[in-house]
Image 1 (cartoon, helix red, strand yellow):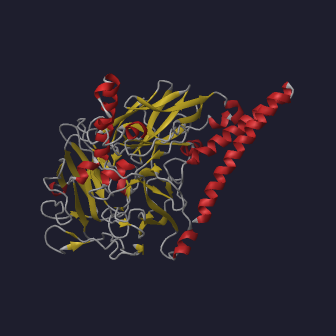
Image 2: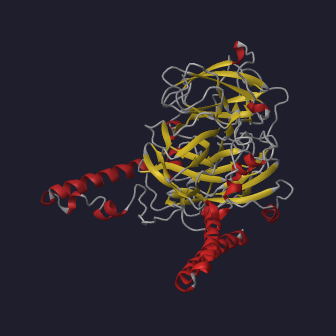
Image 3: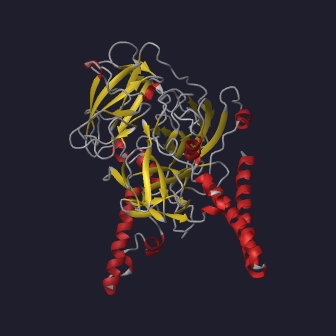
Length: 591
């Protein structure tokens, strides 16, 4: 772990020194060299600068998986690779709604004092203090004025790599490969051991019980629990994310900054062997954006350097935490051509989309991968406010532009390609479904199907659990409530636009926003089984009870092991196995 951190800081120092040397190189070249030599050297140095810029996109902390960590912790027989994360806490720890009220009070006091200075004495605002009003943001964290390209926003809750300092969002970037088993060791905070948390991998098609992605597990203090993330060989590579799922505290922790991007690498069998398509898929830009601070949309990076007319794969994660906002609009300037290639980490059936768009509507938990190229500098907007600039350089000649401009989302530069579809993502639209595999979901602010969240009351289908290895059609009702299903992506089968502007007919998503009518989707209950959580992804509604679970059971249904699950436990009991009820006859409890 220490060597991992030392490597990270050493790499940062090398990058910093490289930029200093390049700047000095420019200075001496401009001052002393004759014109011919100067021209050659500037071309060379521009190339160096571009290489450094490409590397510094990784200034964000990246979680490093390692087999040696497994060996050091004693789990080399359990996982291929391991890593560690811990909960971090900012100061002070104020309730968000109380702090927001405090901030609004501060704004009104400032306005009043400006207009009527003699009518407001110090005692009018002593409860909070003018220093607080002027110098603190919505979290109570002192504003640091950091205006760097890689924006590290202060967080009141978050995840960090052990040995690092501070608490910022987003959390470290997590990258995984298919056909590997990962052991994530998550520790609580020793600063406030009474605060518990957990971690949910949003969008992954892995088990939701046992020692895997079970959102009912928690950890606190110096205890450490183990998440078993086994990524199957057939898993769709894509853009996912992780966040706190501590029931009753999900809203305040995610709003506080406890989230980050997670990427499953594509591999080679995406659906085409075209070399230039694969090069395009690796030509990656990333953005994590949230309105976690005072309901204002911010991104983790303020500027992206792009080359004119070069195709990029841009991964977007937008995290909406305002309980009154169920969607947001992601947009680009007219200088850019953008086409969707994946939604919620899942490639479209035909890649890329034929439709060129400059605006994309997304839910509060959406991810979107787009193929984008720009002819001139532009911007990224969320809800029509600029969150980042796209700085387009016209110096393609200095970076072997002919080869880079060959990169394309299209096969042979002009044709769409069919994405590889694993069993859980095959087209379900034309398959027959009986009435016993149809179900209706009504989402409320405090309940689902008039049931408030409880581990003793599962959602039942005609009095029974749902069957493993079956196709199910669900009708979702509840406008303004983004509906998320763990483990199983949903295919849009409504052809009447009742699924709104967020979703395209026939594509798969993990979070659905129905319109005023309803949205019909289909899911394939294969590969994984057991307890499956569903909830409104306005997290305050989830905490208030708009969450439930159902069981997928039957012949051949895999059962996730419970162990190993706890690495360190100082205050017994730690992360005990949660038993939940099933529907109808049979076992009373089910993991």
